[in-house]
Amino acid sequence: MNRVFVDTSAILALLVLSDAAHENAVEAFRKLESQRSKLITSSYVLVETYALLTRRIGLEAVQVFREDFAPLLEAVWVGEMLHEKGLDRLLKSRSKRLSLVDAVSFEIMRAQGIDDAFSYDDDFVKAGFTQVA
Image (cartoon, rainbow, N blue to C red; front, top):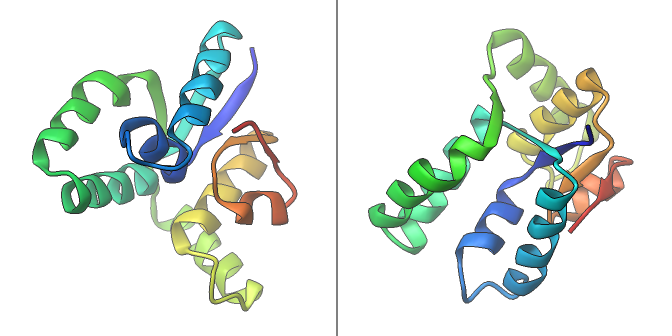
């Protein structure tokens, strides 16, 4: 079974109709579904998604996401060690663009041997992963 890491940028593109990548995200998601891909994310991505949905759309969107979409994702819960590894990666990158959420995502992907990311964030490609979006 193909394992794909799901980033906040893809979740927002799927859920926000006005997002420039919405149609592409829907098509990519349908393809992942048809391939029976296992969708992996992190608790940090979930927190980031909840915050952005609340700010951009409202709590109703958070409720819909929580009930209808989040159950499709296998979440890796970030503990102290993973947080610190991500923070080390962030600091070593010396990049103002890389976020802690993405740095932790990269650590999860490498640890679990995940090469593909459902993402619209170029940092995943720069880190050597393949975008499926």
